[in-house]
Length: 109
Image 1: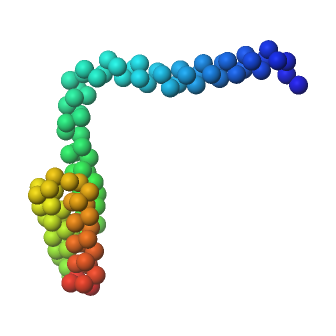
Image 2 (image 1 turned 180 degrees about the vertical axis):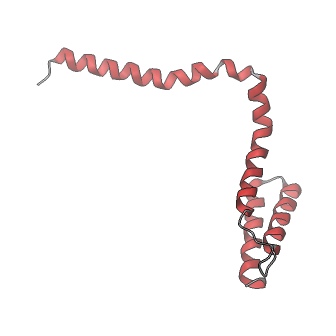
Image 3 (image 1 turned 135 degrees about the horizontal axis):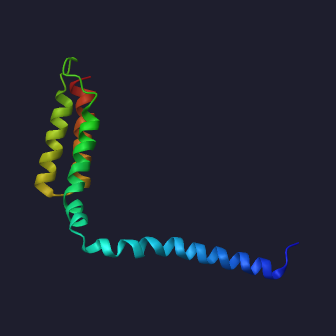
């Protein structure tokens, strides 16, 4: 069985390492808060990520298939319209998804 001082030393080392691992990211990010690059990325990155997600979602759409990509096009247009109308991301996603599912299961079935 380990000595009591060994156990206390091990617990102290674990406590210091745990505290350091939690504190270092905040200390490292403090100078970046006033950075122009971080401000630029904060403004333009969300739109860029959304564009990448839309492109990834539409990559499998075939315009030569019988539906010619119409359900996807209509759903994307409805999503854009809902977002421009209410500026609510959740509402836009729900509207676009609902319209797409309805079109695929009824009109283009």
